[in-house]
Length: 269
Image 1 (spheres, rainbow, N blue to C red):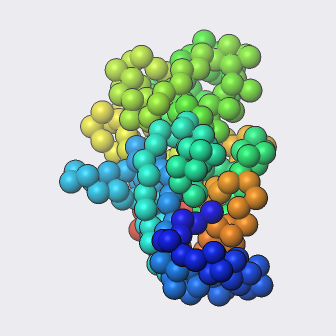
Image 2: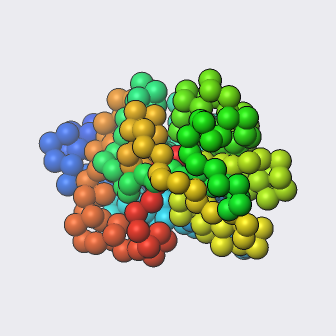
């Protein structure tokens, strides 16, 4: 639930009633309350969420989150976490929502509710050009594939590839995966296409590598979109986010940010 700035109980009840009647009115009432929306994020996944050299949070998800807060007229607070700690952090009320390129998988739906989609998913295999690997267990049998802990990529490899001889290595952040891939400790990784391009392939250490084969298509595990996650049953926060998101889609803000960061729609983890 959104954090209130020492508001009277009567106001909180009134705010909840207004949200239940009309989501479009939520932003104005929250603004009057001086409400704060705390987003949890993992700033190690450019261009979605990362830190600039001077330590500022930046990226597509960060800009979307800040735009959502502006549309809802609430104050944004960002709480950093490893990706595999985000769900636990949400449950522990360290923040109100997760904005970190998260896909709405069946397992996550058991403990979270999700916003309307932000952008589409596009998970790809990254491997050395001269290896001619393809994203299937026959091609990758015996190969070492690095994945982000707690991600849908990890769940996909564990369910579909590991039983057929693919060796999965889990990492706390994607940058460490890229480093081990460049150094020959891994044979490949699964990542969002644009994230792989901007975070690795377009850099000198990634010059020998490329996106290999088609996108991973598994809606049940990978998901088809990126969303914002809230605690199960937190209708107030979810309603506020969806109302603000509808406004940002209608006025073209989401499309503009996608073009700015991705060029085309890309994905979730």
